[in-house]
Image (cartoon, rainbow, N blue to C red; front, side):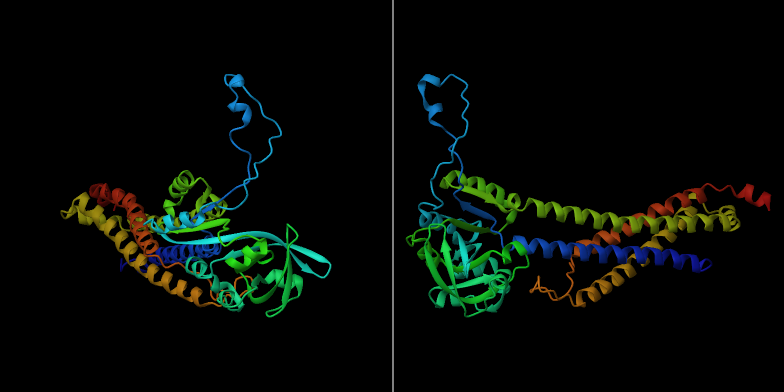
Length: 406
């Protein structure tokens, strides 16, 4: 290594660069995945119970004895109006809170409305929430850029609206807005906060008020609930839990994985790209080590021949070159981890401020130990394989042929 120090250093630098870029790229891409998924998943319950408007699966024709053994075709079947209310919601919530898999439950009333601004009506949605439960599960206060979430509890007839909606209506904190329900009911609510989640679809339509205010807006009793939001200790249990709750409570249920399948697909694709690019960098570094060791064998033919002539076996020579490769891989890999961590830390400190993401201040980086373990392991494996083929070639050199040629 000292005889070919320049080439050895270049090989080590190649490994260091590959590992550093692997760590940085993977940390940044997965940090970005966590950020994007968090924007949606942090605002999404793991399991949502609700009543979906749909046709009855069993039609009267199927119940008729006269047509029991016939093939029946039903056309233009209208959905059954069973309402959006979840019946026995209090009993369901009590059972869910006793489930050991459940962190907490947040009831909600969802009401499509019109926001009146002069003679113009803007369509939107009012979410009547249990403020304390919503804050516990979804940290809604993190997205309030003006005002206080607890004012919904402290004052009657108050509302928090999305930033996009406030800009459309040209209203601010403290203003009173008129809201009309689909049934024609109208109520005036005072704005006590402006929210900004960072997703235009939400910020342009969503608003929040207390559970009781939403029930009064719809002219319903205090037992009226349209959604029950459940958060579990382990999100991977959500599909099974949704199926169980659907059968037990007789409501519709959807899990977070199903509701946000497109986001999970995007995250997986970005992760695959990150791993692919990082591994490609390490493979390229491995080819560099292979070329350097291969050239070293041709330049050191005389030395290898002398070693074998003085009693070194082919296996001894092979392990000399494998050791060279391992030293390059381990040293280069360790420096790569350090430089990768340093580069990630620098990126993590770069300001990233945008109005669409008010809770994000710097570029997102994920510092999972797994990335560093994968990086150093792959560096050692790649360099070992890269050194193995030249080492096998060196071990098969016939010292007699080399010395005779000289």
